[in-house]
Image (cartoon, rainbow, N blue to C red):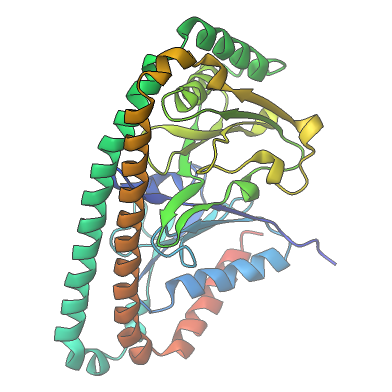
Length: 373
């Protein structure tokens, strides 16, 4: 019997303090053989289509990547089968993909062919109103997230002011040297970096998929430290050093500050550098199968803080931290309302779809995929 394949989970986009932030172009790798771009409205079965094919491939022993939607984590934005070089992507807004090689690599699947317009048209005004309401909730959420970023930045100022830079630099140099130890450079090809999210701000708060991305054989460098201690900057410094050696990296961005990194995976060296600061980031000790004593090296940047300096601003820092948390919670509540509106819209499409035809198309696509095995 074929051994069951494994699932790696990630997010190609996020609801962030900088607004909606998309890394969709990194869902696929350059050597992809076939890309199926699935079009169609809400509720037509795009995610079910991908999940069904995923189960088939897992049963056949193939590992898969599930690229989840940050607004609806139970839904897929994409399915990738790395061993076959095959990807299925949701091609409806905001995921806009223009085929680069139509018919050669890219193929469009339009599930809208299988709905009955006569069922939808009578609900035109309702659908438009729900769509408008959902968009307004998104705009409200991102406006509040941007306000939360101001409070977050303020809370960091006080910590940054108290950091012992010489101590920080020594720790950073030690970390870079430790991670690079034993690695073999590859200067023959340009380094490739894949950028995605391992966690996201969802309607239910922060959802973290790091446990599906880290295997038991990896050595983990776990860095923790409150906002302003330079955890993300240190991860970025390691990433740059690895890239300079010409090695492939997976770089996972922060769900709050998407222009910064929260985790770095170096597959060739089986090493991980990750932000493990509580309460927003997972602790590697909680990852199933990881032996804490043998596999995890912890770095606490709290030792770089000059406590007497920080104490002078503690009241202001705590106030800014509270405002940040309160605003984040408020923004997330509006993301939840936007998701609820989307669910209302899906009901109309459920009623209009011919899912027998969708299943026929799914079986046809599965046969095409199996040609690459």
